[in-house]
Length: 304
Image (cartoon, rainbow, N blue to C red; front, side, top):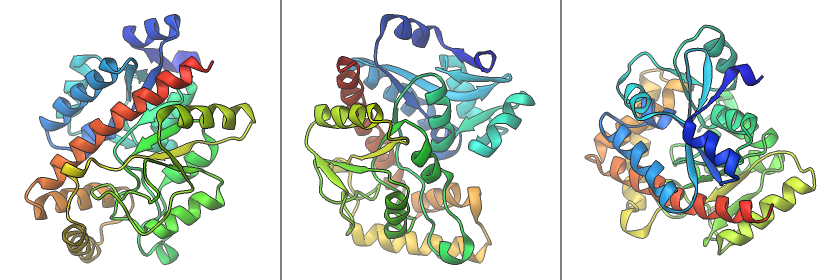
């Protein structure tokens, strides 16, 4: 297995010194935001993690290797390239074997992080059960990964383009705890809440870290969702974003856009319909998650 994994120098040194490391996905760079905001945001998020006492490890597939930590040049290349595959669990082996470029989704980043011994992962929002999934069976691989991979995902909840109720039901069936950071309700990415309660509320990073350590010490397989609401000043109006999402979903249906193409299309359409405000919100919530993720990682490391 080790022949497929390459650690950046920063990550290698952090491992030797026992420093807390945080996984970051690369799909947010290649498919989630336009250039140059994607690369600028990736670098800023990495620096936030360093400033808060942890070490960032942006994960991607390159030259037949799973790269745990990217150089500045590699970040730039992923931000600019148009031939980067969106890599989930099913794609990993093929992309590594054929030496193609792959940007890791939430599911693939979790797999690669666990292979590298990293258990805290910061992202924007998780995938989930898509609206109409009772007939399409369109359910993100992120949920299945959360059920079986020992990585905690710090996120602003699930994207509001999804069916949040069914997403919570799926996670409950799989035994994945959803912990709200200083909130009783599941945040829905662009807005701070939804009508769905989280399983547990935690008001500090230490109690989250302690819960994660206990979960894995008990041999309870799988990850956890740490739902961190977008900061108040960057949250969007709930009715406005609901109307925008309904419009975007209708357009996706009319154009027969589904599967792994659906989320990038919907996010781009939401950005267009909100005059770019949704992109600003997206950037700010990822940065906010990086701060919390760093605190949890530092606390978890101190419990070892």
